Image (cartoon, rainbow, N blue to C red):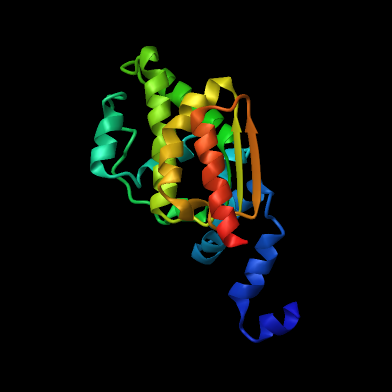
Length: 215
């Protein structure tokens, strides 16, 4: 089958099948995007379908690439917390990266934002530690806003909220409640809450209603 595709000139389809073998080999996928445009176009979706869960190589600055999708007003709000010019550098992104996400784990999003915010604090003295909680909550909410606006096609959604993370969950849950299409195509759903709050009850009711309509 592979040989027939090669000799028939169907190289992109054949190459895609090859790259799929490296699905979770992120080091190899990073090498693939440097080969040429075709390799890059085929490998990028695999690297960006769940960037919050990638352990190695780990670089939390991918969050800044997502933030390029914010409106100018939202960027201005973020710059009230971080006063420097590198958070939104004047460079264009080559892909619509938020569109590629397929698996989302709220705990991993929370952890990635905290780690990224700590690097911002180290790199820029104008960033006050007292601003971290409000800044990170705004980033958490902004990322969900970006995913919702880009009409992502989530296959897996893990909502894992411990006591430290409830404020972050609360910041995003209203957006989700207002946009039922965000959970429309989910096939794997995991829910873990340290306690059942009013917002958790609203969220569970929302899920129950939406999944009932699908069945």
